[in-house]
Image 1 (cartoon, one colour):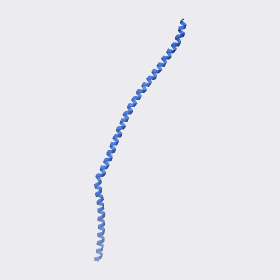
Image 2 (tube, rainbow, N blue to C red; image 1 turned 135 degrees about the horizontal axis):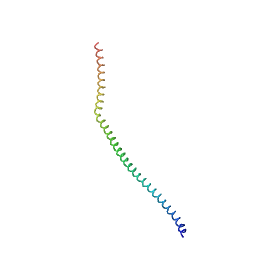
Image 3 (cartoon, one colour; image 1 turned 30 degrees about the vertical axis):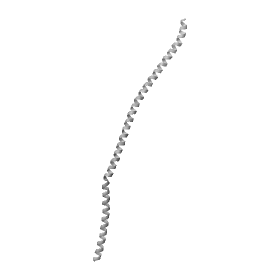
Image 4 (cartoon, one colour; image 1 turned 45 degrees about the horizontal axis):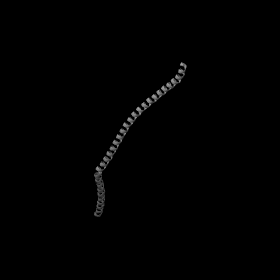
Length: 115
């Protein structure tokens, strides 16, 4: 009778050992997956922080670009009266030179007539 018990207990023992091994494998897999999940959550947090930093830098860049454009426009318009005045002065100089040349020609005519 004891031998019959051994015949039944040996397959049961093998099945039990197999179940223990499978449970250990499942536990190891679960542990690995939990570790991977924790690492992924850490990486996600780091990604979100870096993404926020990039967004902040892009916003600062846009503001600086707008400020640069505004500053350049202000500089152009602040120099506008001087450019207009310089253009007027240039035209005046051209006109005065033409007047001087005309007067020289008149002086030469008068001096030829006097001689």
